[in-house]
Image 1 (spheres, helix red, strand yellow):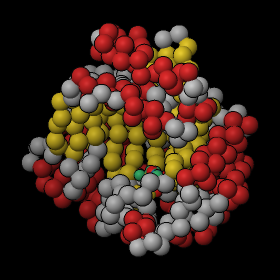
Image 2 (cartoon, helix red, strand yellow):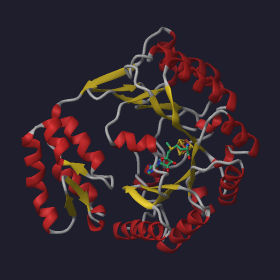
Image 3 (tube, helix red, strand yellow):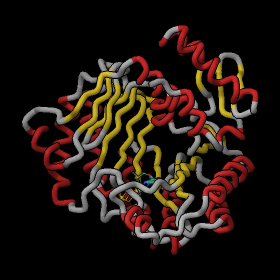
Length: 375
Ligand SMILES: C[S@@+](CC[C@H](N)C(=O)[O-])C[C@H]1O[C@@H](n2cnc3c(N)ncnc32)[C@H](O)[C@@H]1O
Ligand code: SF4
């Protein structure tokens, strides 16, 4: 089983924190749809006949595509790949695009999971972030989606935001939990170069919470979601039983995926490819019948590091039997040596052949992962 990711590189405007690749001009949307359909054909052998379990429209803003455009892409995938019956087809969507009619139409074409970018239920936060929707609109959108029969809805939230205190964050979580959704992705804000927040930050005009306050916000998130029966299955991801994101879980488990569209990444167990981050360049090359990507063959250490970074962030942790089998006994010994301090101090726990972060360890996950990496 494998997955397909499609990067839809259009946004109505740039949010103050975001550096994902997108352009504001949607004039090229039609020609882009042609190109991505062409890329599907060009890449038909990349997954070597494996059937497709998950399709993920990410971006950018995939909800800027009409239901007909989305359907055209899905049909094109179906004509070149074997899409399994029990599939997960996710659309990342912005609340301002989700009308009742739109939701009804995309449900019909087979989209069965929504990931709605809400970010915050506080209008001051939303304005600061340059979002195009209000908190009420976001809440309404989720209700509409439920009325249309969507039974697998995720929302994105951000914490560690400028001027966000613990009480406001707690209100945000409570609001999210009141929506009766199945999944929450909550990310700590990263200040990315080339964003508006970065500029404010450099000028000393961004009032970010101190680190201990951010950690308290993370702790509150874990506590509140757990009380409501959510499974904390990856550092930033929480799901009701049976609603873990299959697409992302497959990434973390090292399953093959094909990424289509500008800036999309692909992985086929031996090498990693990434398409160029330039819409015009992408279109030019695709219409010449070429895939505009760079390739990196992964060394053993790089593959090992990839496995560590992804697996340790999940509730399953890393598996030393798998490490011995895929990388050799020295790599297993490396883990055993490096983990002893963290096990003693209760940051890691060993169960069978798995090493997992404890509740205490989750708060210093970056530090632990870094100390395991091979040069
Ligand atoms: C690439 S965006 C696409 C989603 C959709 N366009 C939207 O705006 O809702 C996916 C998610 O990444 C998260 N994200 C983007 N920039 C981030 C940053 N600088 N730090 C942390 N999370 C970020 C946001 O929560 C966002 O919803
Ligand atoms: S957060 Fe979403 S809408 Fe905002 S710029 Fe990034 S991809 Fe576009």
